Every structure is written in structure tokens, then in C-alpha cells.
Amino acid sequence: MADQYAYSGDDKRPTEIPAIRWEEPPEGPVLVLLDQTRLPVEEVELVCTDAPALVEAIRSLAVRGAPLLGIAGAYGVALAAVRGFDVDEAAVALAGARPTAVNLAVGVRRAQAAHEAALANGGDIRQAAAAALAAARQLHREDAEASGRMAEHGLALLDELLPGGGHRILTHCNTGSLVSGGEGTAFAVALAAHRAGRLRRLWVDETRPLLQGARLTAYEAARSGMAYTLLTDNAAGSLFAAGEVDAVLIGADRITADGSVANKVGSYPLAVLARYHHVPFIVVAPVTTVDPDTPDGASIEVEQRAGHEVTEFVAPQVPVTGAEAGGGIPVAPLGTQAYNPAFDVTPPELVTAIVTEEGAVSPVTAEALAEVCARSRRVSAG
Image (tube, rainbow, N blue to C red):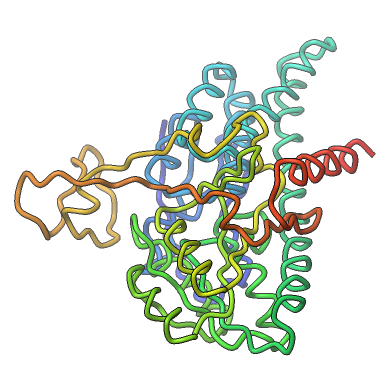
């Protein structure tokens, strides 16, 4: 593998940041990622030439966000196929890179199935690779379209729940164009409210681990000209108590069959606060994030991240090949053990609505989610 970093000095990127793209230079096809670990300090692109490089990018959170992980997984299978590597081996490695995010495995399976179908129908290796790439590109297009529809449905729901506009929205983690083929999930709804003149304030949780709200959501909000304010995760309660939050909008990494929502750690406490203060708690995610094979929240494998992310302060920096994890400024005594789950799970009874590209589900029940998934399959088949 020969990953490369290329600095882009362009400060005039559009709001829809190209977080991922397929390129075919003379030396062979590559997958180009906007390295999200380097934001907001600098915009740097990471070039992946094979599946192992992409797996590392996924694990390091250089590329992240449920919908985008699905797209990346599909492109990773295509990359292995086009470059003549073992497709099945690449698929296994990619699907296991982030166990909680169901979209990753969905994207991998989709490109892998297209590859297998082409071979089964008598196609050669080149035709099978082309089929995998076509499947990845189609998933990319579909996600962009789904993002637009989620924004429409989400804004309509906000206007129904909070007539009159002037919405003060609290969001958690990062759910904009950095996680999507389009303008995102929950952030896309807030952006639609902003463009319609109905967003008064976007409250941005800094979000552990890796401060993805502070580094990424604030970055996207600033680029979009939105009125936003950053806060520490544990300051959210005081905002609710002061009556400064009209709605909570978050994304999801996995939604189980019963409507339990796995999202970046800190989401569950927000749901509890929202319920106590009678504030709508809305989850925005594409249908691909719904996992009917996982029955409930207790069945979700929650990723545990390295303790040094808690015991040390590490600023974005240029990666050094072979460097050990950590190396930041200690903020806890040497040897301190850290509890650092990447996600928590919110039960369906605390979720006001789940907004998908097929519409909003409220109240959140297993039956309603199953119907949305069935409707999505009928639309896709049609």
C-alpha cells in the first residue's frame, strides 16, 4: 500500500464538501478521502490505493459517519476488485473495521454481491470489478438523494412540532456532508431550517471522543454561515434548564429492529434531558441504518476506544509512520484507566421520531420501522 497525503489550500470549498471520491490516475484507480482527523486545522486529502489502507482510515476516523462508511465500504470492495486483490478478504476486513456502524457492512455486502453476481453470470474479472464499482457509485448517488429527502421530511416535522420558526436546535457529534454523499442527516435538517430562515441557533456539543462536534460540526456550520454556539457535552443540561433548546437532532450509527438508537456517546443523556424538559428528541438517518437483524439495543456491539483519548489531549497533527498511539499532553496521572465507549444506546421510548428518506416514524415502534423498511425496498425494486 502506498498512501499519500496531499494538502489542499483551497479555502473556498462548497458547503457540500467532497468527503470521498473515486479517481483513476495513470498509475491506477484510487479512493480519495478528506482526512477528517486533520480538520479544522487543515484540509488534507488521503489517497488509498488498497483495502488495508482504507481499513486503517476507517479505524482512525479519517473517514467516518454511518452513511459515508457505507459508501467507503462499497468503494473499498471495488478498489480491491479493480486492482486485482482478493475481494472476499477485503470485504471481511472492511466490514469489521467499525463493528457498531451497520452501514459499513451494508455497503460492503452490496458491492460484493454485485461482484459475485457478475462472475456467476459468466462475466470475467474485469466485468465483475466494473459491476462492483457501479454498485458503489449507485450507493453514493442514492445516499445523496436520501440526504435531500431527509432534510425535507425533517424540516416539515420541525415546523409541525414547533410552529412559528426561530428554532434553537441542539445537535451532537457530526452529521453533515462529512458523513454523507449529500449534505448529511441531522445537520442537513438544521441546514434546511437555516436556509428557510427558521433556524435561530444551532447548539453544537463538542462531543467525545475526538471532539467531533467541535472540530467538524462547528467547521461545517461556519462554512454554511449558520448561527452556532459550541458547548461542552456536560453543559447541555443547563441549556435545557434555561429553556434554550427547542429540539434535539442527532444521527445514528445503528437503529435496531425495536427502534433503539446507537449513536455517539452522550446521545442517551441528551434523550433523558429532552424527555424531562418536554423537548422533541429526533433521530435522522437513512433506512440503511436500520438493522432488522439486531433485535434490540442490548444486542449492539459497542466499540470501545483507546484510553489515551481520555487521559491525553491530542491536537490534530500530521501522522508519522510507525508512531505509537497517544503522544499527547497528559491530563490524568500515568497509568490511569479510562472508560471510553464510542457510542451509547437510546431506547425507543425516549425517541420522539426517526426521520428517514421515506418519512418520519412516530411513535417509534418495531412495526412502524418495519413498514418504512418495506416501503423503501418496494421503491428500490420499482
